[in-house]
Structure formats: C-alpha cells, structure tokens
Length: 184
Image 1 (cartoon, helix red, strand yellow):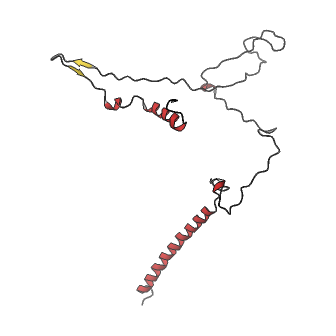
Image 2 (cartoon, one colour; image 1 turned 180 degrees about the vertical axis):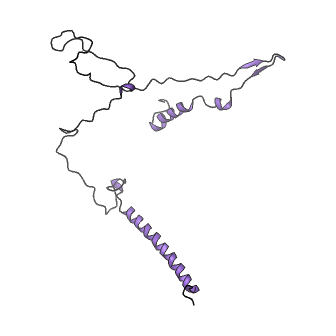
Image 3 (cartoon, helix red, strand yellow; image 1 turned 90 degrees about the vertical axis):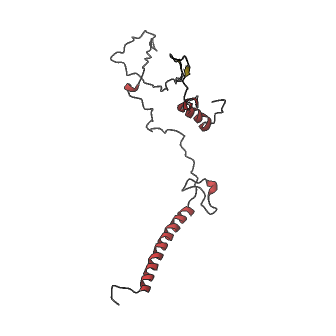
C-alpha cells in the first residue's frame, strides 16, 4: 500500500476516533456547566437562602457597625440636582419684608452685598385633560327623489368607547397597581 492511502478499517477507525473526541468534548462542557449549577447557593446567585442545598455553608452575617445610620461626619452631601434655568417654567420670588433683627423695612431689589437667593424647585406633571372625540353620522336628503340617506359610523370606531391610551392607563391601575374596578 502507498503511504498516503489507508485501508478501509483504518479510515473507519479514524472516523470513529474523531466522533468520540467530539462526544468527549461536548460531555466535558456539560459536566462543567452542571458542576457550576451544583455549586450555586444564596451567597453566589439569586436563589433564596431557603433553597440552599443541605451541605451549603451558612450565609455570612455581618457584624453590626458602631456607626450611626446615614451620612457620616465629613461625608460629601448628595444634593438634589437643580434643573437649568431654561427648563424652569415659572419663578416665584420670596423676599423678606422686614429685618429679622431690628424690624426695619427692607428694599425689594437686591443690593450689591446681598447673597444669591436659595433655590428650591418643585417638579409637577401638567394637568391631564380628557380629549373627547365625537363622531357624527350625518344624513342627507336626495334632491331628486327625496330619499334620506344616513351615513354609518364605522364598526371599528363603535367597537370602543375608550381610546388606547386611556385603556392602557386603566389596565395599569387595575393590573399593575391592584386597584379595584370600582376604584379605577
């Protein structure tokens, strides 16, 4: 036999070996995946502590901190971010009328030594106004025969007395927020 040619049995054996190598590779991937799943517990996944395997380590309990709750002394404050002036719809000035010390009447206009005003912004949704669309089906009298012909309001319009946005809002309140049908 020539060097480049293999017998039929050798070709069969080589094909079988290649097939078995692919099978071993896929089984090794599966074993790794299953072992990773076996090693999950409440400390390294989103499973609750009650679903931990019996041999899992107990959850680590943190020691109580000696510090009080909240921001600590020297901690930089997290202040509310103010909207830029161009986003403000209306500005209302609150100016003191008399001095808090001697009760002297104070000027309305700011002086050169007066500090910048303190700012506080209130964000509000605009009032929601119901938009009612009325469909009118007119009738016309024929000038020739005198017959009155009525237009019909299409069935797809008559099928709903509430529009899609109001329907979704009502669905949100009843389904998402648990408000009763009477409450909606």
